[in-house]
Length: 56
Image (cartoon, rainbow, N blue to C red; front, side):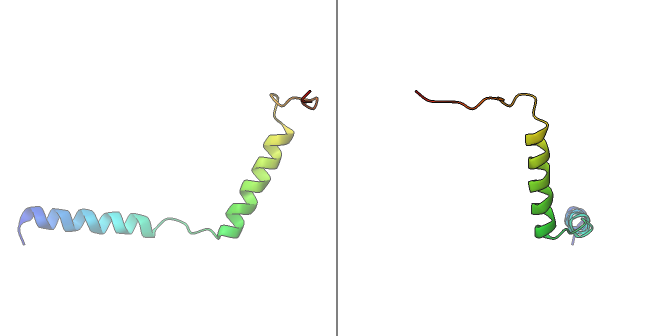
């Protein structure tokens, strides 16, 4: 191994370590949060048209 390969290995190790330290969240919790946020946004949306759109 030379210096550049050692630096590359160290960089790869640190990158893997940073990914491994990310907090894992269950997909069911994430999807529930997304649905909740969408529902809240729909309730508080000032740009929402208050009257229904009727196509003639």
